[in-house]
Image (cartoon, rainbow, N blue to C red; front, side):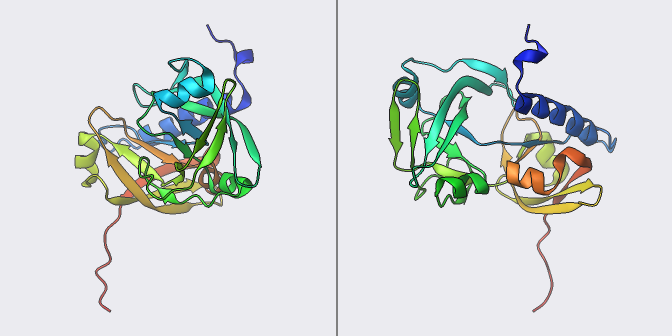
Length: 230
């Protein structure tokens, strides 16, 4: 059994945030099919099987902690990211399972620190993206592409799509209410799938800017096109 002393501060903050925001989302009582959960997606890496072997000298990742979506996990393994300025971010967490393409997801401030002009993209859309160097305990991988700032998005299953009357690829708004810092985030891309839990992902910069830890309510709003006449 994992004890409190084995959890680092980031893990503890993430657990507390999941509980608090989960309660906020489920307290509305308005016949929503699922509670709205808003999570901060910190910098992380997805790797191919080949790159796992090169970086760690083994065939598979070691699951450390399950993520909110079933079947996904944070791995024990971490790597260092090196940018063109020779600046480095150490101990960046790898998420599993492995993918067909390696991908690095950074916040804007992370990208600035590394000297990488990372575009805002939906996960998996890597065409024309910059690369970086990954350094693991057993090897080095030089990526020609794969560094992005993940577009803020909301995962939805069929029941959630019907409730909010949206479809895959549409945009929504997220209203976060907190003391003195109520904010609306636009361009929240809908990512649909079967057996998916309702979950919003924003990055660390966005989470800090809207004071997500201090949020008292969160609300998803359908983005209705403006019908104003020119």
